[in-house]
Length: 278
Image (cartoon, rainbow, N blue to C red; front, side, top):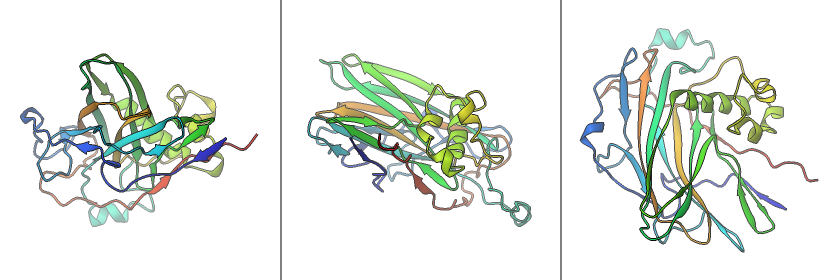
């Protein structure tokens, strides 16, 4: 059994997956975002896209190539525009993060589409969190030529019929769980060892005992997410995804349109360590 962890490209989309610049007037951003106002987040693209969109291209290179099957993965970031703290606010932090859980809430709605009109396709959609200290980067295991990805913080797998599209909303409370799990998995060396257990979708923070024991007193807010398409097989599936993301500003932390944005610290990539050899 061999383990391979922590592989991550620095571009918005890994390998040769493509970002699609899609314009939707109904998703235009609104000015300002204070006191529970909802605002759509937009990607940083020169085309001025208003949704986050990408697709597997026929020549998308494997993220990892195995002897029998390969792992295909493309990702794009969803960043939260945060306003800088005032001098008084910064002085009052006393070492605490500028943005914390509950300061704002994020919701993501995506449509995943099988571009193949003749065959069904199998694909995974993933979301992983980024806070002011860590970015969650799942690894994977190769076991007897089978590629087994680690759990992402939010993931669903779909069998899409020919030409089928599905639209799914990842609710605020689900993304809040991502924030809690990221803080919990990185809270101590002991909790790092059970990171895959903590992020497993059935182990809800505050309910499941081992996960709950790792929750720190202060939970940083997510400053971003990585949206991904993932597939294991012999070729990249002809599948695309379009996503809109919006934020509800509960504590006056989101930058107004045109306002200078706060630059969070560069996070450290966190990949769950491999389990001990049996």
